[in-house]
Picture: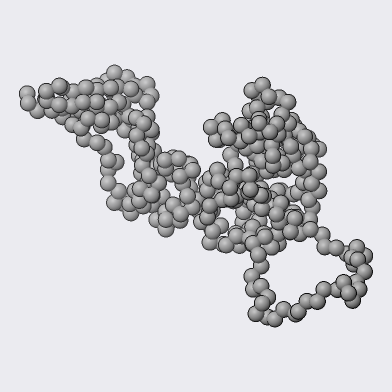
Length: 364
């Protein structure tokens, strides 16, 4: 389902908390009078709602989180906050390109429009720890480092334990388009042990999430870095891919086959990126890994040496260069640009098959 338009999207957490506003007490209610009392007809069973609303379910899952909100808002320098490691978003993966539009918005308005969430850390290396708002913190930090140190970080203080902080951050991250499935999956994999004693059903209940959805994310979080590197990008790896792979990776032999094929695919992806070519799609990567697990994976495909534009590889599979032109009349034209330093003998060994297969050589 498409997310709400920018500027109109509101925090699920904020909406949930507002929906839990304290009910009026009898003392605060105006005195009733027969004239003022509204006449209401009793609801019959058919007209009563059969399912709680989305916000009601989400609010129920917040538990003590929603009851401990203090909500003072303060202005901070980014250096006054450390980043809580329990948030799904990988701070190290943030770049100017990923935050460019947010940086421009904060610079124009002189502040972050939506407050980040922090908690006090009296004994920590900084006075506060950032729970929610990693991109906003990174963006204000970037502005501070680029001649805009007057811009402060607007923050809201919450009183939360680690489990409550995890749930609050998760609610916020679910409505963020740029938090990848992999970031959430690895965050869930850590949380299920750290906060729920390894009991997945309990974690799903606390997050108001279907158990099957959580289990699929946990499968994704269990994929090794080697397998992840075979995909075109971290953002391209989805829970559905892990779910497809899971039945084929139960034994040590199958897992070893998948890892070996993933390394081969990763080398191909690196060569494609180096040449500016389109990477292998995630679905096709998944298909090859499954074939490898069954012991029926074909050799890594390489373009024939007699076609212009083909990539040259060393005998060990490293990208070496490209065949620019190959014709009987014009001869063979190559570009050699190894991805890593190579000795002359390795390069000559890689060139021999291309020269022997050249069209002009067939006429000799």
